[in-house]
Image 1 (cartoon, rainbow, N blue to C red):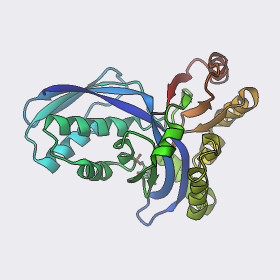
Image 2 (cartoon, rainbow, N blue to C red):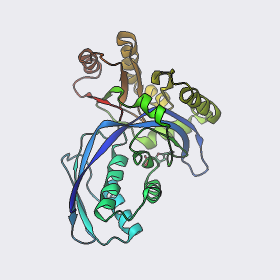
Image 3 (spheres, rainbow, N blue to C red):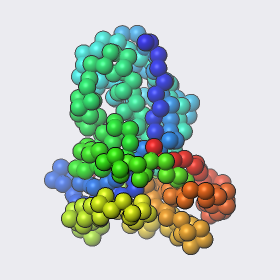
Amino acid sequence: MSALSIFSPAKLNLFLAVIGRRADGFHDLVSVVAPVEFGDTLRIEAGASGEFGLECDDAAVPTGEENLVLRAARLFAEKTGWGGGAKFFLEKRIPMGAGLGGGSSNAVAALRGLNSLAGEPLGGAELAAVAARLGSDWALFLPGGPVVMRGRGERVDLLAAETVARLGGQRVLIFKPGFSISTPWAYGQLAADGEKNYLPAAEAEARLAAWLGDAKVPAETLLFNSFERPAFWKFPALPVLLDALAKEFGLAARMSGSGSACFALLPAGAAVEAVKSRIREAWGAAAWVVETRIS
Ligand code: C5P
């Protein structure tokens, strides 16, 4: 096989509790994260030995060595001793600076694709170890379904099949305003405010356990995001719209990751055109909206 095409999904954090700051400056978290059916496509063609290159249909995406796809490729070659090369073509649909995990997802797609081109030298656990070395929230994309993420994001636990079934197929509307939020800024705001922004670990685990332990508790009850506090303070347009969607349409809506993208869970059969219009009315023509499902 000398070329392949890999789907690279966006993710949503249904529950994201930042529980404290670590001695290494990173934060520990407890998060339920789910990939969705919407995402980018990464095409990979075998290339000249030792050479890796990236092209993207979106000129705003940096395609130099700093791109996570090329960093993943270099690390893969280093780790496996693979002597091949590859050209990557990224069809970008996931907005950047959105909290939707686009960069990490692309990098995991690159790792998976190269592993396949090279004849699968890395097993699942080794792929996870490589992913964890590159970024805090890469490993979540390896299982291909909803997971619980702990530590700085590198520890990933699969959910029981019944829990996955509770989330799989859930309709969601994802929407992002014209501005982005930087992840380091968001963590920096949490840290600057001291302990009050952290949800104690015991409370985070108790909330998670309450949802996991009772199949009748709907996903709406789980929704939580520690980053909303700094993000909503700086960008009041976020809570104003989320409140309006709750009041006018009865929708449970939250921010994903460090933002700025938000999402609303859609009841089966709910009409979305009026909701989309309301989002564009609130956030203007720069608002980006997509309807998809949890994978
Ligand atoms: O993993 P990512 O590159 O997105 O992280 C960006 C920054 O966010 C890190 O440099 C760190 O300052 C902060 N971060 C953190 N705790 C985490 C993940 C990221 O403090 N668990």
